[in-house]
Length: 68
Image (cartoon, rainbow, N blue to C red; front, side, top):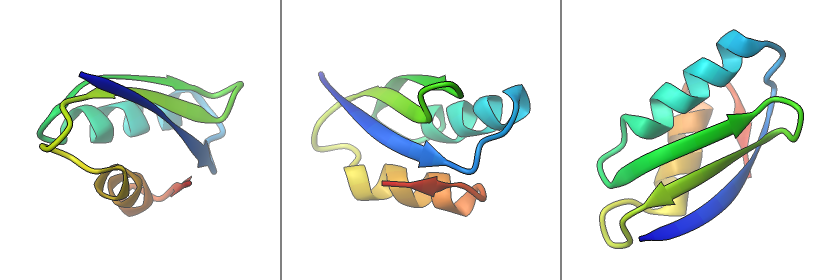
């Protein structure tokens, strides 16, 4: 199990946090996503080899937010 922190911009409310959380947790290999509006980041626990940082960032981008 690995953990990474993605910076997420464009979130403005609790609904945004829920959207980003759901998108990340819907990816194969992601076991947990904790998204913070205040910090502008998502802390993601995942299984290495099943999902990449790039795939997570793209999923967030596809949901209408910016991840880096």
